[in-house]
Length: 261
Length: 334
Image (cartoon, rainbow over all chains, first blue to last red; front, side, top):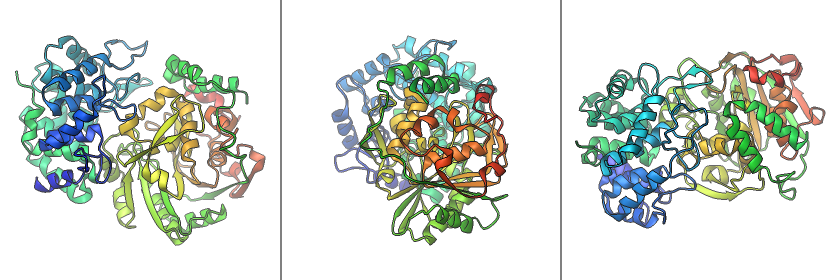
């Protein structure tokens, strides 16, 4: 646990924020994740300074950090503006899409994907549960994107009429968003993750699995062992986001991503 | 090829993306020659060498060294970035540039006098690069060479202006290891691509664009127009050399869900357009019918078959038709 925290802290920049890897300038997603993981006021202060006038947190065109920044900031006007931004900036929808409920993409005016949708659903469920329509939109589309037998790929469940297989990372992200829900899709996703998390022993997959399983109340000892092995082998590539998810999964930061009834 | 013809052909190959992609093209294409002629000098002499290798078990280091020498590659005293294609990992598939070839290239480039060799990619589909690295075997292959790997999805970035306007992006965020390398070697897999027709040394450069800025699978680029983005990115990165892994390529529904195609070749080039032109013909495709490649040949490299200095094996003799999705049948040579 401690060495993961130390590795994460190595990405702290001089301005108080966090970069995506050690030595890099501060960025919104890395700062938001580190703020959650380390309960770090310096990172929160950086986030407040970095928030755009419209409430979003952008790196270039990418605004997918906004949901995590809202979770990291916790409360206050900055959070309200971030959530307003989330509700106002949905993904584009293909004319052929059978579920026209727009969800969330990596950047404005692009398609929706499971990971940014999961983040937005999580943030809205925890911080603005009154946004029931948007939350339901997210759940409907997560349901549409579910692969046959449970679990999620990164986007659609099929491309060019060929079924895609589910992966651990997006499935774990979806379950982080869905924890505490009682729909059948949540049960299927939980069962899929339980059966398959050890198929993909990569840092981000394991770290997000750890968080999902803690939120779900499932055993995590073997996940931690596998994550420890990857840290030993690769240092998780020094990736701030991966290290932050791991730290959240190993520590008290889990409470800041938990949705309570 | 006229601009209109390019648009039509690009529209054909991008049919999967549908009307949205076509709308993006018509919106983005504002000028007849969307590149700065003062920045892109006319292509110089292009060298492409084809070498045979039946598998990955032989002396690949010597083969790569010979191939690079044949095309006149100069890496002495240079900081070299090898950019393999590590877009995804699925067990039992041949999605990625084979790690044994990447490791052999590290050793070959060092032997040719490179000051430093780094291997870098920003996987386009998976966000979990650590998983792709470990599961693909690249992690262990590189450990044996003591080469370092950099995740281009998380590396520090720099904003660079574009000298092309095929998309309306105007600028690109590129990783420091890409911007600061003295020499970039694009190392794609010889594959078909379900939106672009083929993915070779030009398309491989999507992995130089960081996912944390452009999303996964580099979604902003797809939205901006896939064929146009391929040209804009390639024109910004401008790789110096290419090594195409065609020992085992992928046909059919590439770049991820296709099937293995043993071609038994490596293609080396000092011009990515010329390299892809030769590689496409080895796959049985007419390069002039591949929209982005034909367009890139107008300014970014040599696309005229007769102006390419062909070395090594005769491409015609090692060619073998790659299966393609129905919408790409029109790309065939015959």
